[in-house]
Length: 218
Image (cartoon, rainbow, N blue to C red; front, side, top):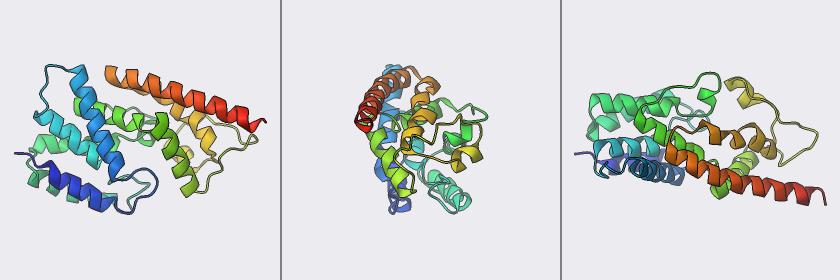
């Protein structure tokens, strides 16, 4: 029997000091949204299936090894391997979860789009949806403020992202982040449910940016 409570507790402890929008509650929302989208796209599937448990585990754990947060991701990965085995996952399921959380991020897919297992596709979509809509706007400005980025500077133009290092190191403003990344996520969705929700949330963000620019020009 799979014990997701151990995974939730591990995530909460690992991310307890996170303050940039990649905290435990982000993982919880990703897990819940990924499960919901999978069940919407696959009405014959059962909520208690092992695939749903895999989706939830990857959703909760995905940011515990993120390079923006973890100083020692390799050590955390080894801890997660043991955790997943102790939580009732089989070897192949552990491999799927670990592959997903190591290849899910936007930065890991700029140059080459990794092919995730079915469970990973829903988790990746849910994670990207967390960068869109009202929560996405809040997270963008929280992260930008934490890292000292300007809100906006019309002299700093958006760039086309070409690789991981450029993405991490180029001169940033939070408004440019919408043009460089967030508005492009809609067309990167893997699933039907993800595409539908991404369209709705992106439209909301475009309205926000339109209003922001109107107020900036006053």
